[in-house]
Length: 80
Image 1 (cartoon, rainbow, N blue to C red):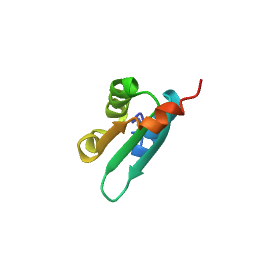
Image 2 (cartoon, rainbow, N blue to C red):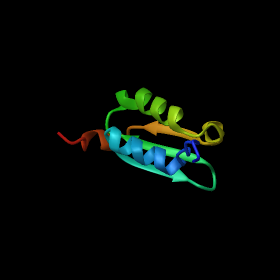
Image 3 (tube, rainbow, N blue to C red):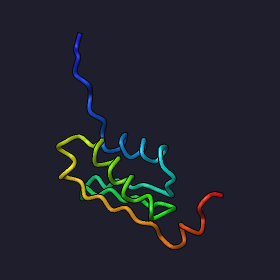
Image 4 (cartoon, rainbow, N blue to C red):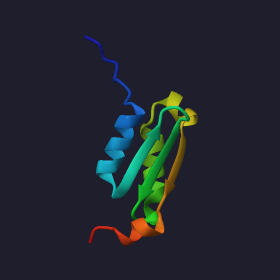
């Protein structure tokens, strides 16, 4: 039996983060290795960045640029 744990893909990690935190949207660029995260509350940025960084496979941590932001319009749309 194989005891190796399969690392999650970038898509799986960002989808997990989307369900764990309040986010407006996530986009993963396959050509330019970018991850864009639009959050409702800019104060959530450090914990989302930490979650994504800690859960990405080691080879993808340095390869993917991560940009987490809160557009002013998005903050006004935050669910109550």
